[in-house]
Amino acid sequence: MLLKSREEVWSVAALLSGPATSDVTRNAARRLASDVFSRGDLAVYDELVADDYVNHNIPVPGIPGTKDGFRSVVIATRSAFPDLAVEIRDIVTEGDLVVFHDHVTATSTGEFFGVPPSGTAVDWTEIHFLPVRDGQIVEHWTNFDQLGILRQLGAMPA
Image (cartoon, rainbow, N blue to C red; front, side, top):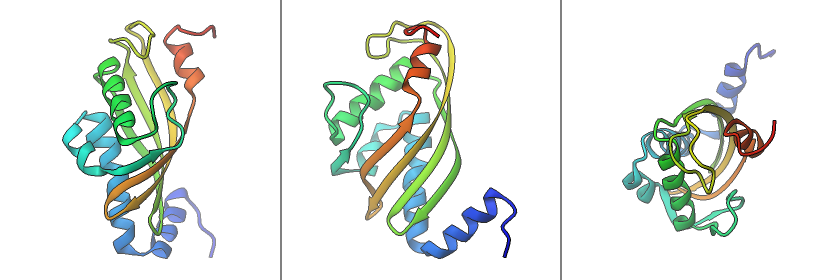
């Protein structure tokens, strides 16, 4: 069988990982992107992120990779970019793991970890790996172009 599009590949991956687990893990990713980051809903954050959560690569020195540490990153990000919008472009589940690729757009209107607001529209893409247990995110790995964001904000030379 030849798969002709990304959507067909993801559909086959979803079938292989099973519907019940896939729905729960996929929903956790969607809620993180839409409710927590795009809308800034911290009540959803508190419900969605496990108390023993570990973030393996928080991009800000001095902030622990804990639930509270990641919460502070969410708050700082939403304060610096109040119009932040996350669009999930691809999402794949395998058992209790969800992986998603997203595109973020935002406008710099507040200080962002020492970078003053510039009024600049910025955008970037991210890839997230999230193990989920009982509907809660328990770990988090992410990859995104931090240097590209700083360049767009004028904090680093192009």
